[in-house]
Length: 170
Ligand SMILES: [Fe+2]
Ligand SMILES: [Fe+2]
Image 1: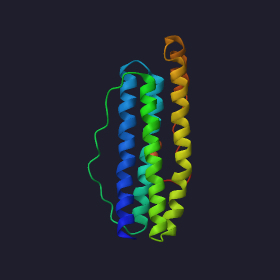
Image 2: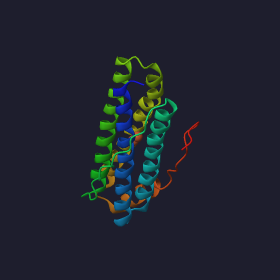
Image 3: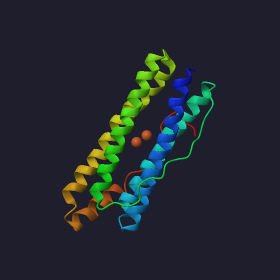
Image 4: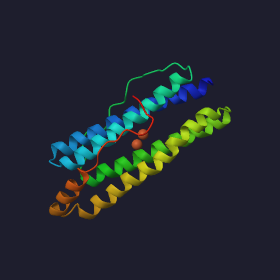
């Protein structure tokens, strides 16, 4: 595999684990402030990020590349409000989408159709990621000033469950 491509894929393993760290930090904070439904929602989100990371990890090895695992950056740990957390989550997903698109551009530049094809899953996944964070931001902004309503949105968020995507082993 092209050296620059390999380095960029390794960077993305790290970025996906950092995403998992960020959502785990949010999950812990929600638990601390008495919102277990959002805490559970964020834990599911973190599990999905670990799957994203492991798919890159497996792909690098499948292509005969060397996996490099640098330190994972410490995430932010406190937030002023529920909607601020989902605003951060949405902003983070925009950032990840940009990274995925840059990876696609690099795969095209170095003429690596296998990586380009592999990345398509992430291009589609990011549409979902932005939508789910955006939906939660919109909902929590609407009910934030009404604790009773926030309680029900928290209960609703608890229904989200983790499902392993088809064909993935980690
Ligand atoms: Fe991700
Ligand atoms: Fe994500």
